[in-house]
Image 1: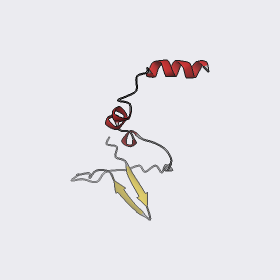
Image 2 (image 1 turned 90 degrees about the vertical axis):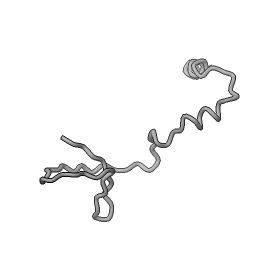
Image 3 (image 1 turned 45 degrees about the vertical axis):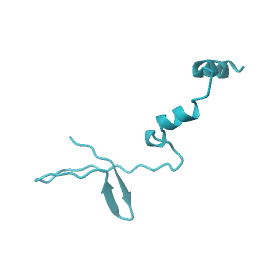
Image 4 (image 1 turned 30 degrees about the vertical axis):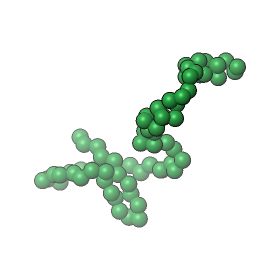
Length: 71
C-alpha cells in the first residue's frame, strides 16, 4: 500500500509527489480540515533557534522545572 498526501481545492486534487503506475490503482480519499494556525516541523528552524539562543546563559531544563513548580 502506498500513501501520498495532497491538497484538494476548487475541485482539484494536487498530490505532494507524482505516482508512476502502469496499471490502475484503487484509492481512498479522506478529507481533513486544514488548520491555518497550526505549526508543523517545517515551521521550525533549529539553526534559527540556535542563533536566537547563542547568548543565553541559563538552562532550558531549569526553566521548565521552575515553570512547572510555579516559581
